[in-house]
Length: 329
Image (tube, rainbow, N blue to C red; front, side, top):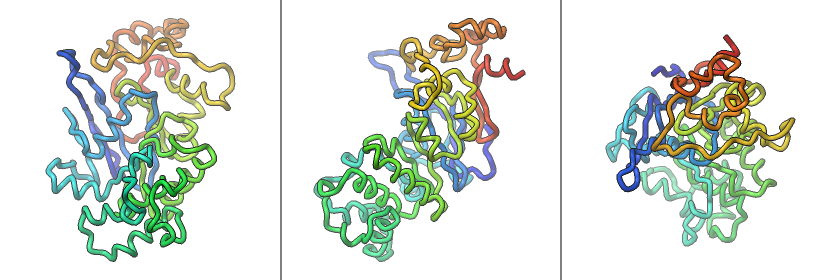
């Protein structure tokens, strides 16, 4: 388990499990993940619904504890005492996908943004801090929004209030879970531009959790593609999205509106994470194996029987795929 010296936040060999229903085996929601977010970097974590990306994000926030492995922030392992977690969450803030669920409809915008300051008992000038956070989130003049309630705002304005509530504590890193999924297409670009501006102006790092590879292209420096609890491909956004190596990444890209050719339809549904198959966990749905390409490359048996392993840290582009490695050998 290696970490880049410049890594701000790292998952190191992270495993998160949940009890199975009615005596079923443990659900391996995160099944051995190494992932780094460097200082000043935006990383997109992408994959289908149910692949484990939100659970991984929650583990990185300390909201769920790992069964094995660890989370490291600023070079120090995360501690799970109440005081340590409270201090950590001031430095690493969550931005939720649904601003309607994130904002209390009975609280004004001022109170929503000031809540973090009050929880953490910050001694700074509260009014000035709230105004500054709203202004950074693009709500200007901020005083015009102080006494408004969430139902009086547009969807984009509500998401900006959520972002302001994270910014008010001056964090070093944001974890944004599908930050534009609930917004109209016309507003999504504005929120993505805001996140990029915050990185430029404040040096903020971000982990953006999304199912949308198009979003990743527009905002990320690096991409990590997740399938059934594992990172299966990672690298610079230009490498992964213009020359994808894993058949799963290729399939995800093929359904984008601007993608050339026909979409790749994956067979069946992802396997049950309590019963992860042997070999490559993607092999039962893999179009390369189904078409005979893996057999012609001499790796069909390995695809079915041998785990391609865990990708490590934030090094150069990596892929967990026997076929891709055989092609490049």
